[in-house]
Length: 398
Image 1 (cartoon, rainbow, N blue to C red):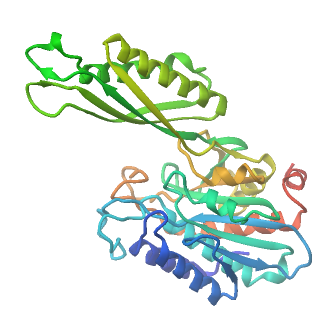
Image 2: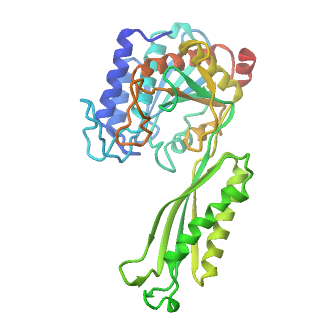
Image 3: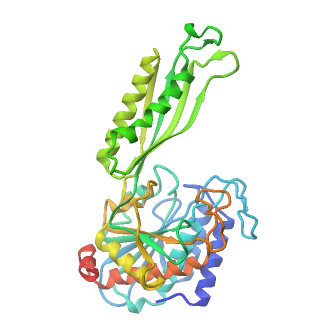
C-alpha cells in the first residue's frame, strides 16, 4: 500500500496547516480538535484519554489478529520562527521546530491508507496522537496510565531528521536514545565588597570551579565505551559591580544509555558539587529531576521497521543508527510493550548547511512525508499479519 498523488498532497496540506497553528505541550486543544475532525471524516472511531491528544481506533476486516499501536507527537516549541514561507507559524513565540507537524501528518496519512484498505489486514490498530513530547514529564505517561496500551502487542513510531542524506533511514536494535535528567545547583557563599575578597566567599568563583570539575564525571568516571553526556547550560551569579557574589545558580542536564550509569552520574554530580563548594567554605544544594528512560528498540520489531523502510526507500537505504544522546518519551511505551523507533531523513537537498532541530529556521523536505506514510503502513501490516508480537517478528525477519 502506497500513498497516491492525492493522498501525498493531502498529507502535505495537513502538515502545513499544523505548522501554521502550533501549540505548546499540554496546550494542543485546537491541534487535537483538528486531528479528531480528520479521523472522524475517515470513519475512524476516536477516544480522548487526556484533555489534549487523541486515539484513533481502526478495526481490520481480514479476520482476527493482534492489536498494534502507531504513535505521533503533536506539540510544538516556544520558539519564534524565522522562516518566511507562506505557511510559517501564525503564533508569536511558538513554532513546530522539531518535525512534530510532519509526524502528525504522516500518522493521519497512515490512518487513511489503512482505513481504505481494511480488508487487507487483520486485527486492530490504535493511532496515538500524543501531546507534550517536548516536556518532562511528557504526554506518554498519562496516555499509558489511561490504558492506551491495553491489549497492544507492539508499537512503532518514527522521527524526521535532517542530518543524513534524503532517502535514507536509521534504526538499531537495543538502546538508541538516551535516558535524560535535569539538575539544579544552588551555591550559598558570602557577599561582600569586591576590594575585600578575603572577607567573603565568592560563589561565582566556586561556580566556575564546579563547572570544570563536573566535566570529569564523563571523562574520568564513566567507562569510555559507554555513551554519556553532562552539560551545564546556565550559570547565574552576583548582582552588580564591586560586589562579590554571595550565591550562584547552575542548571544542567545529563544522560546515558544505561540506568546504572545514570545512577553513578547523579551520585558523582552531588558529591563533586558539594565538595567543591566545601573547599571554599560554601554550601551547595543539588536537586536532580529524573527524566525519561533510555529508548530501547525490540530487535524483532526493529527488523520489521528496517525491512519496511528499505522496501520503500530502496536497497542499501537503511543504516544502523548509532546511539544518540537525546531523549524521547516514546521510550516509556517501550517499557510496557515491545516496539521500535525509526529515524527517517527529510534533509533538503539544496540546503548548504544543516539547520538543526529546535532552530528558528528548522524545516524539512516534504517529500519525506509520503515516504513516512508508506513505511508506517507497510510495517503496521507486517506486524498485523505475522502473528502476536515481537517473537513472531523475529522469525519472519530472521
